[in-house]
Image (cartoon, rainbow, N blue to C red; front, side, top):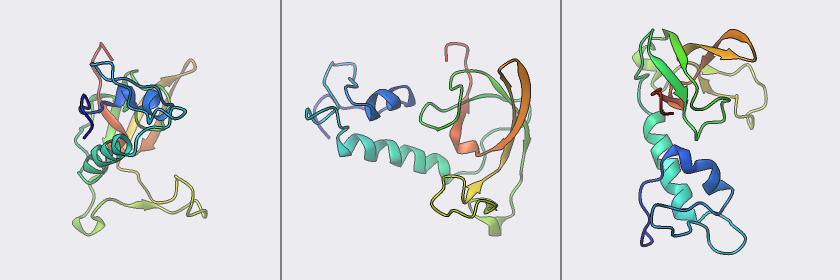
Amino acid sequence: MPAGFGMIDGGDLRRLLNGGARDDTGSNWSDGKGGTPIPEAVIEMMKEVSDRYGKPCPFKPGDIVTPHSSSDLRQPGTPHIVLEVKELPPEAQLGEVDDSDPQSSSSGFGRRLDMRFLAYYEGHLSAFWGESWQFVPWTPQD
């Protein structure tokens, strides 16, 4: 790993992918050629997500969570509440798959919808099914 490079937290993801992200030492994570993130940084982020993805839902109904900043969900840092966790049979391994989207190249194809959550969005409370790996516990400083 390059000198001065530490663990990348989700808060740095968007800046990193847009280039120009810096760690606590001030070193630039980009390749210095137009802000492209260095492959090692992207690989480290993907490994962290892969670790979360391969685990069962860590939450229970009533937990307050927020979308991880590395996810493509709206409102990272805002509180959401877990309504239901789908207990998946062992043969499902990584979860039941949503194959309702016929485009296998779509990010929606193959989703593991293992958690229902409630969010306050644009003046309304709305419930959604989602993938638990895209969430982290919410804390007021998020």
